[in-house]
Length: 312
Image (cartoon, rainbow, N blue to C red; front, side, top):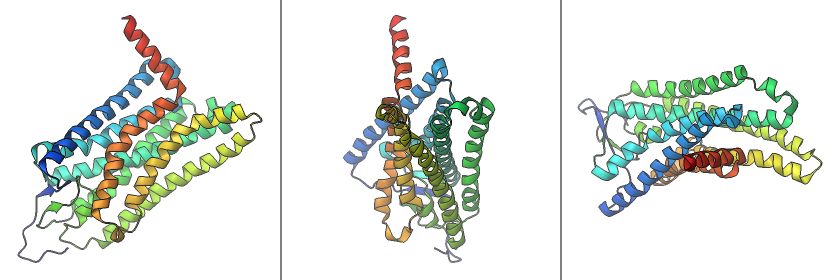
C-alpha cells in the first residue's frame, strides 16, 4: 500500500484478533489464560528442577533451561496483550509497543530454534562420541554454545525490526491478526515493502532451514550409531533419549516452515491465525510436558522434589 499526500499516518494500530461474539471471546480468554498459566508454571518448574537437582547439572539440562527461558518470553511477547484484548476489548496497541512485540517474538523464537540445534548436537555427542562427551561438552564449550544461540537469535530479529521501524503506516490501521506479525503489519505500510519482504524471506529461509538441516544431520549420525548397537534394548534406550527433542523439533519447525517460508499469496490470513495460535499458544505449553513426560531424569528430579516438599 502507498499513501497519497493527503493521507494521515497511523501512530497506533488496532489488533483485530478473532472477531468473535462476546461469549466466544470470554471463553477464549479463560482457555488461553489457563494455557498461559500452565505454560509459565511448567517452564518455571523445569528451570527450578535443574537449579536444585545436582543430577540435572549437565549440558543437556542447561540447554533445556535456556530453552525454557526463551519459551517464557516468547509466549509472554504475545499472550498478555491478546488476553487483554479478549477480556477488555481494548485492541489498540501503540506503534512502539507493536515494534517491541514483533522484535521479542521473533528474537526469542529464533533463539529457541538455535537451542534446538544445540540440543541436537548435544545428543549427537552423547550417543556418537560417548567417551569424549565430557571433553567435547565441557563448561567452556557449553557456555559458548549457549551464548552463541542467544546472540544469533537476537541478531536475526534485529534486521527486520530495524527496517520496520523506518516505515510509515497509513489508515486504516487494522492489523488482521492477534499480534504484530510481519505480513499483516506490512500490509498497512504506506511504502513499497517488496525489498524488505524479500530480505525477511531470505532471513527466515536461512535460519529456519539451516537449523532444521543441522538437526537432521545430527540425527543422521545418531541413527547410524544407534543401528550399530547389537541389542534391541540398547537401541530403544538410545532412541528414547532423543524422542522428546525430536518431537519438539518436528512440531516447532513444522508450523514455522508453514508460516514463514511458504508463498504468502496462497494462504488466507484466517488460516494463518489458526496456525499462529498453535505455535504461539499450544506449542509453548506442549514442549515442557513432552520433555517432562518422556525424560526419566526430569521425572525423577520432580519425584524427589515432591517428596522433600511433603516431608517439610
